[in-house]
Image 1: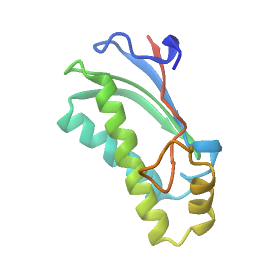
Image 2: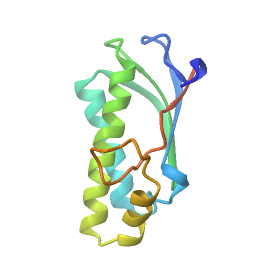
Image 3: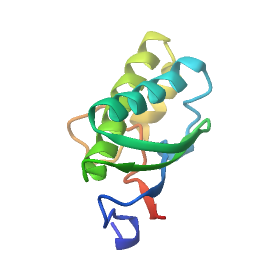
Image 4: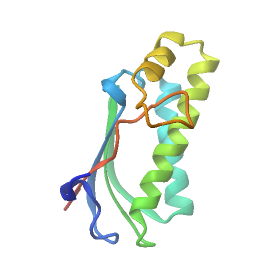
Length: 128
């Protein structure tokens, strides 16, 4: 990953973007939107993340955040891991097979421990 996409100051405030693989429209129903909101709330309460602003679109989200514990990288990885797991479970519950098939089809070949890939590789942070 290029340096401009790395968090270089763990205590800094960042504008961050995370995108669903191939820009697939996952967040088109309230239940999927709520998964991300729960993840944000958990990180605020347990990882001391400070969330200044966010927007969730149908295939990606933006947020402005920092971490009081100087561990923003791990906090963001936690958000992506939790939401991916929850989204896949919800898609299976909702029988949204067409989307699950797309998440399987576009999965990176090196990802051997998962049948699906929800997020594009890496998050795109910009230090503010």
